[in-house]
Length: 79
Image (tube, rainbow, N blue to C red; front, side, top):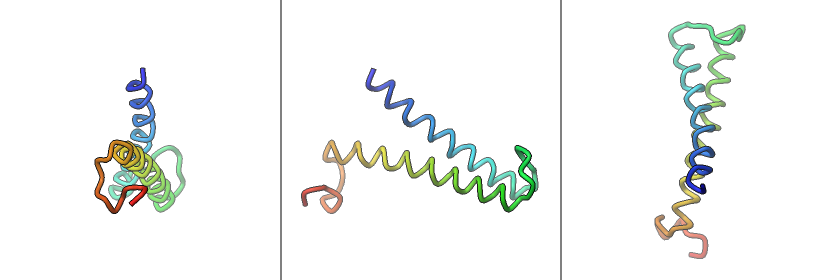
């Protein structure tokens, strides 16, 4: 059950990152999505979603690796 919960915690921000990447890609090719009035706003929303999703997934993996002592000594809590 713990693994399933961990998977769900990762999947939701992962979808946000994918959606953000798609919005940025569509902006480059000039495709309007989701009734957003301007392309620069679409790119900005995509960038924010991508950074939130990627940051959450990276932080989750870093926290897990830190608990299992699989990080370099400079990243350990009690140096």
